[in-house]
Image: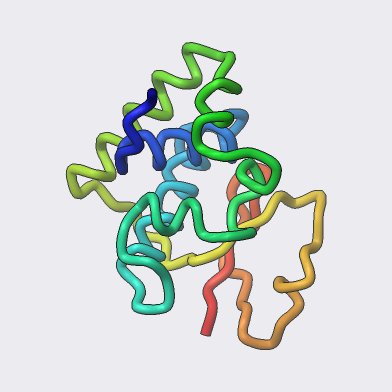
Length: 130
């Protein structure tokens, strides 16, 4: 049985969403999760944000247990855990984004008038809602 903790939820999100990115891309994904935690529009816990329905693609067909079982690249997993630990200890980067997607897709929500693209980091475009 895997204990579902904030560290696990954030590490899995960084790993499954951004392990192919450089460190800044991984930091940016972590910052989006933390921005949502700190926003009244989203759940107020890391796991609440991460497991919110249809928010993070790696959980669209999987759950936390399955996501843990799908960790295959140990070095990338260690980096993801280090980034998650830093954010859970209060580290932040200057990025106000609450959403992102890979550059090779254009999700319906990105065209909504309230979504404002603010930067592209690696293979992800980041948005501020509002």
